[in-house]
Length: 60
Image 1 (cartoon, one colour):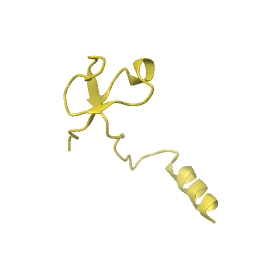
Image 2: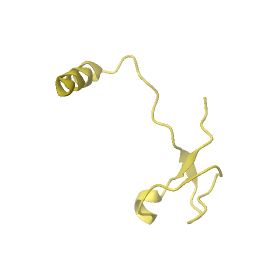
Image 3: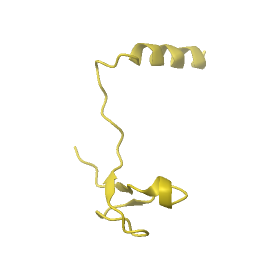
Image 4: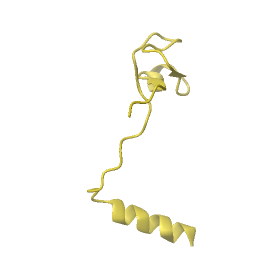
């Protein structure tokens, strides 16, 4: 599934904070935009077990 919301690819260098848009170019600087969704879940994540254990320990 592709997200319609996109973020400026140069926001770290040009802007103070991310610039979100629906178009293929940034409305403020004209740079190309990229998909703003995070990477998909990977069931073979080598460090997933440690990350989940850390979350459990912090919650307690």
